[in-house]
Image (cartoon, rainbow, N blue to C red; front, side):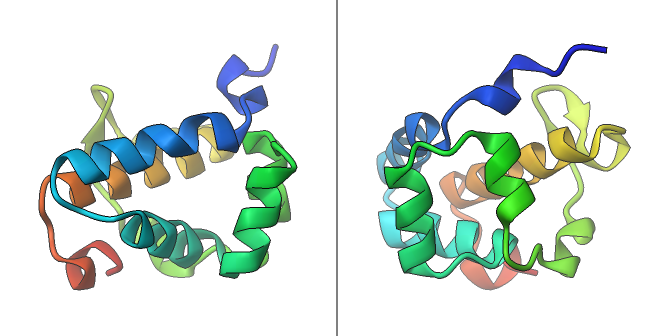
Amino acid sequence: MAKHRVFSIAVASVYPHYIAKAEKKGRTKAEVDQIIEWLTGYSPQALQAELDARTDFETFFARAPALNPAREQITGVICGIRVEEIEDPLMRELRYLDKLIDELARGKKMEKILR
């Protein structure tokens, strides 16, 4: 089976959209970074290095220093699909990130977002 094309997209090309979505709702780039760092275990410097290197999503998640075990508590619908029912592990990781950014943009408190 062919890989989904989103896996080969550079994180750096989507990252500005995450920030724009958050800022449009009065949230900050720092909060977006905090979410990504919480989910993946990247330090701020390591996250910036991955963005600068234009790392694709597949590599980004494969290199993640410490995927947060609490991420499995993330539930709900994103893009019309229940996150907890996504079978492909990499797609699930992507949708976890999307769901967290959505929660941020909807005004949810960081304590609740970061479970």
